[in-house]
Amino acid sequence: MLATHKTHQDHKMYRAIFMLSSWGFVIVIASFLFLYAGYKLDELLGTSPNFMFGLFFLAIFLCIGRLYQDAWRRRKDV
Image 1 (cartoon, one colour):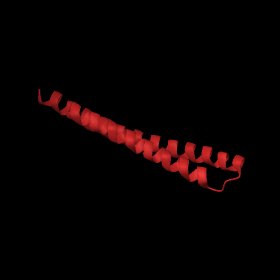
Image 2 (tube, rainbow, N blue to C red):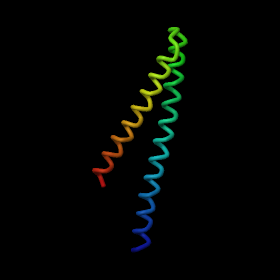
Image 3 (cartoon, helix red, strand yellow):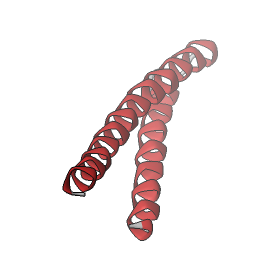
Image 4 (spheres, rainbow, N blue to C red):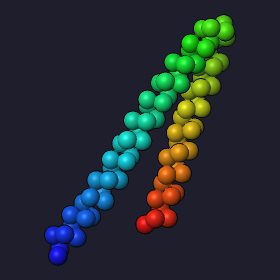
């Protein structure tokens, strides 16, 4: 009985660690993709780093917002 309870706690801990690492991966990938899209848009329109920085910060803002929303939903489930 104790071993089963221990493994369930281990799975919950590993699940939380996996979710945080996957969100970190999503933030990095999204910020680089938006940064590249902004760079190409700036190159096309001739604007300096306007779209590049704007889309970069938009990606970070949206990813952190989704992370917060997911954490808030999971907090209610526990």
